[in-house]
Length: 313
Image 1: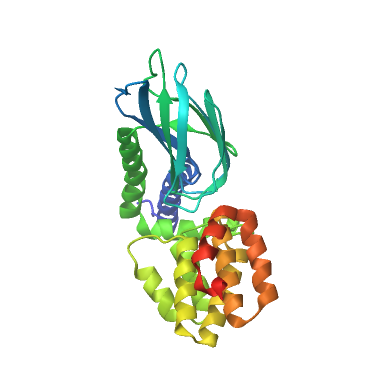
Image 2 (image 1 turned 180 degrees about the vertical axis):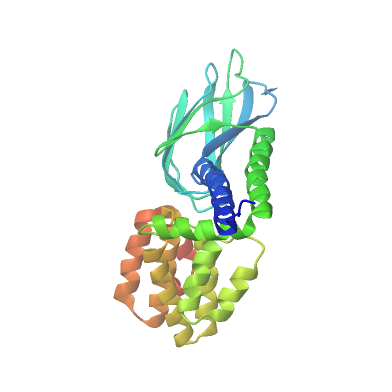
């Protein structure tokens, strides 16, 4: 009877699983772990005033990927209609530069975090007719923008969720070892780009803010660097405890040097460091951070400083 080398058989099976699962995960990561620029349009039915024919278009631009999108530029054309008015808005601190005439709109922004977005609202006028939708050109560093609709968005989300669930349920232990191997071999680069909650929690931990770290990791929603720096800074200053303010100063300083951060978020962190230094009585250092913030978010910085009690004194 032929003896079976169980060690060799088990090792062979494990290697087969690792190659299969690892190949699937690597392919999945290559396909999804990147920035994407997308846009979709909404048209309101034309209406007539006593003097002219008008129409309103809304266009939403967003980064649906998992990485920072940089050097974003775009152009909007409504031919044969003319552009009467245009307004760009966002729920995020994004500085958008625009240049437009009656025929087209050009816009640009330095960067867009994952899941961040902004909207263009356009009032058009025409003596002929209106296009069903604007002609949009959109691109970023290494990316071409793509048009989507809500159905495409949901389908894309389902596809992204399906493969990881299957693989994680089937081979959880193997994937854990595989992930560690990939991290060890590839490293994370000079700047860490990952889940923002986990990165901030790491920095809280090394600066003895353990309760803050535990609370952050228990949250169901993902926070952003800029909003957490706002919250952390205001809480520390309002506590009126110099030791707490110093810890926050160290966290924000290390965050800037450790993590890969969008320019707009970096500008807000500089602003919060300026607040901290102002509170601590370091006027020169506060001014230095204000200048750095001004380079990233000039308009937003001006608005914030007008209403911030620290800079009114």
